[in-house]
Structures are given as C-alpha cells and as structure tokens.
Image (cartoon, rainbow, N blue to C red; front, side, top):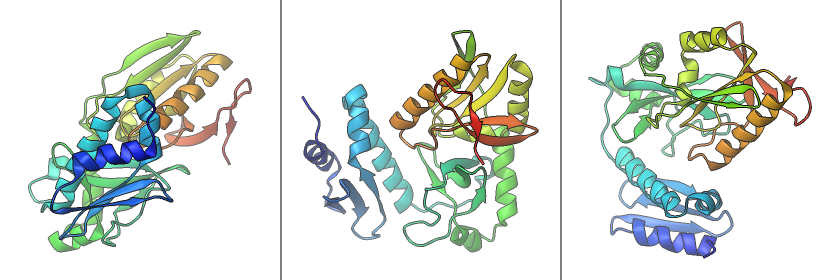
Length: 269
C-alpha cells in the first residue's frame, strides 16, 4: 500500500472528526487544520512529513499524530495557570522558523539561543505542555526573568541517561527519554561541560528534533560524516524538527558548523 495525501487526509479525518471540531484541508499546502468550533483554537498538520514517517513506521506514525493532536487540543482549550506549577516550567528548544506568537496573537516568551535555534518556555501539563506567552505572565503577574530562572533550574534537575554507540572509532552518545525536553538539556551547562571533559577527540552536539540530544566524540573525519548523516535522518523523521546542523561546544558557547561529506567541517559565519 502506498500512502498518499488523499489517503492520509481521510484517515486523519475519520479519527479526529467530532461534532465540536472543524477540520479544514488546504489542498495547496497539503495540510489539515483541526480546531475547536467555539474557541477557534487549533493546530495545522502538514501531511507530507507524516507520509515520510509512515514509510518507515507505518501505523505508528499515524498514531503519533493522533496523540499529538488530541493532547495539543486539550492543552489549548483547557485553563492553565502557572501558580503551583513552579517545578513544571521548562525551557523548550525550537528552530528559528518556529512562530513567535500564539494563534490568538499572544507574544511568546522567547530568548535567542544560536543562529539556528531559539529558547521558548513551557508549563508541563503531563502528556503535553503549553508554551508561555506574555499575556499569561501579565494575567498572573509573573516576571519573565523568574520564569527563565525556574526553567533553567528545572532542566538541570532532569536525568540525563545516555546510550553509547561506537562507529569507526568514533563514540556517539544518545539522550532519548521522550519526556518532551531531551533537546532542552542542551541548556544544562554542567552536563555539557561533563561531556566536554569526557571526550577524547572533538565534542560535537546535535539537536535534530525535540526528543533527542546527540553527543559525538569525533576522532577522525569519518566521525563527522556519520554525524551529518545521523543528524539529517533524525531531523527528517522527528515529530518536532529543530535543526540538521551540529554544533561545536567551546568556552561555554555553541557554534553551528557545516559538516561537508569528505571535507573537514567549516564553522558557520
């Protein structure tokens, strides 16, 4: 069976259709928007990336989208507060192409991170999270700097289990807990410094999508090539892609690099 946009659209509509929802298909963009009729809050799913994941994961890719949509709609249409959730506030890494405002027009709390990424802030709701915007801060009289400090503290408290794989004498360490904040752990400076001390060669770091963080102990040219291929694969298949580029970590700073096959990586200006 070959999955097409038409077939995927039909599958998602059958699973997501409810009396209190509007489902709108955009033929030009090949996307499906699901929103609550009353609040008009919702989200848009781009179908081609789901088809690409379906090629490898089959029905699991469909189930993942259904789960994501259902949980996101619950979060959007529920009433969330920050009070009492101080230990549930975390930073979230996103690409620079990610929206700066909510669909309702609220300006999200954002900090610059690298040339490829930004830091957003979220309150954890269990199976999903809600990004924090300035309207929420004003309503509850919270200071943005307080949120930043809480989020940084909380991300440092998260466990950092690593799985190691060695390929062509290069060591690769994977962090993949699927708690929604795997990529966020790149903001744990003490953790990064530990990895810097641990490697024997050059430390390169990749955050291809929300649910994985990759450290590479690069000891030869082949290591760069492997990391480039690995990062692109994760980026393509990730539910929330961030960047296919990797980073050097030097003097407490992340510097994006281009890894060109068979050529030594060049720093991005």
